[in-house]
Length: 400
Ligand code: VNL
Image (tube, rainbow, N blue to C red):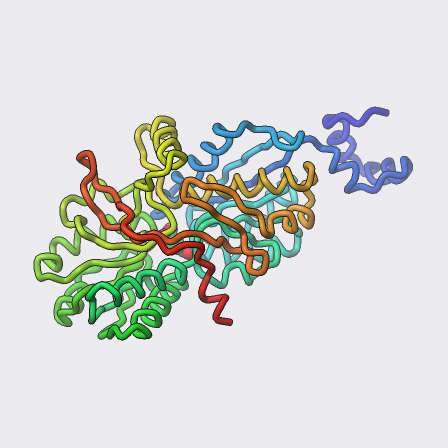
């Protein structure tokens, strides 16, 4: 009897499936491994307040397939996209459905920290790799040994910003962050590094994540008259923040705006207007990186997506796919969870963001953090790199 994919699945639908395989002396998982496709279930907010993240990420994953083909190590890659609307219960339910009913070999995505936290137990129970391409709270990778991350951690970006600020004449700062786990990481690591280098944080403000009105918080910043305000808001939200920053006239009052790159993400920065000029941010990606690889990536991505610029969410997903492809090459096409996770540890490759590797101990990325200044280039606003901190590990885990 020849095992084609079709009759394997037909068999799987019958109660005699396992018995038939046992009769042939085949363990069930060996027969399943004969399957010639690797299914990647990508779960992202495609609608709702964080849809910009999902749209960028899905386009980034598709760009990787366009650049590298849909076959790796003899396996056909099948990308399935699901919308969780940004609700943790939905993310978890969809993940369960993907691994139990749809035979997903890899889970990918996770636009926000609560969505990644909710799904971690599914990855552990199913022993399926969970590739986090967006959410950036340091502790996420500690929630399951099956989690690997291709985005960044807030402590990576915020500590670089704290050092830069202290070394560049900024003496007093008010911090303003979204009130959830990554905001706390951003605040804690900015404060720690900035104060270690002699800076003073005069007030720490937290703003609701949902439907934020920044005005009263910006008024508090103005009242404090610090040299700078350090900001973290999730991708997309920077548009609303900058509008209110301008309306309050904080820039005109001489208060510098610094932050992680999320507040000026590449999808929205060009629409911010002159208020964004001179913002200094720290991040692992900017579309303005001059390397040939990145410039080609930006050009191809824009061509494929109606002119939309890739932001760090797009690159996170592009590298999520790179991680899966390189791991499959290493396992010779073995897509079992254990084999893939082991293969992912220690992998390194060249990304549009620069050289990256997966820290085998933490399953987080080791990568450059760029200090960027928002400037006009060829008539458009870009976050232009002015300094690089090379090969940054997640400092929050190094500290443990
Ligand atoms: C998170 C971190 C989300 C950084 C973001 O955008 C972001 C998170 C949606 O961990 O929730 O820019």
